[in-house]
Length: 328
Image (cartoon, rainbow, N blue to C red; front, top):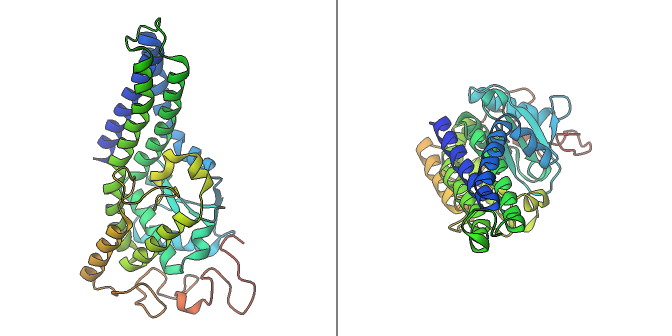
């Protein structure tokens, strides 16, 4: 079903490319746009994950460079019965995260330094479990291709305004049609993003809560991230709004979460759904704390210890030493 949805997405994006190409250069422009779209579809399938990670300056980490963070993702992936994804960190103060990759065998998860520094260990686990749920549901293929092609469509629509609309392009629409396409093409791309984004967030919330074992860990994280998204700017996301739907919470500071055109459901609705799920699972009714049931993958002994044993920043070292993030 996810591959069928991706095929429909690619067909819709290709049609948009062809429409803009027709506005720029008539039938010849439409043919060129078709060839460009076909090339971009193939390129996006194989390379869109690397493009998005590079866009946000994400750097890959391993067990040696980020032991706690890496071990958490590794344990959560095992609980989700997924191959170990590549693990990345983005140097960004806004707490947020996303997953990417064309399939579980080629997946990557990325979290910002703001997320790792400002959330508790349980909350980080809830967020990363949510991202692994996207991987398990094959949402990452659709999300990365949508992000790449939506941005390209907006760029091509701007070219239509610059080069299109003359009387000799055989388009039959002229300046008025070109202006309409410049407005409608990015809007149509945004509608496609919304169509594949809003419902998948609820599905990933539910599966992510089941993976980490505590729905309220994710609920608490969503509340914190949503509040911070309005106060802490994410400049790469502001410069590349077509990728906003990939994040667990919309990273754009000016985006209304309950807007009709939002790529994400209202955070309060997601939290309410998680609260209902927590009651069904018999979990704690409140936000996670040191006294909450330790149902997560670190409930046992070893490197992944309960948060109650870790003073201060959950990524810090015990013994009164310097508190550092998982990357140092």
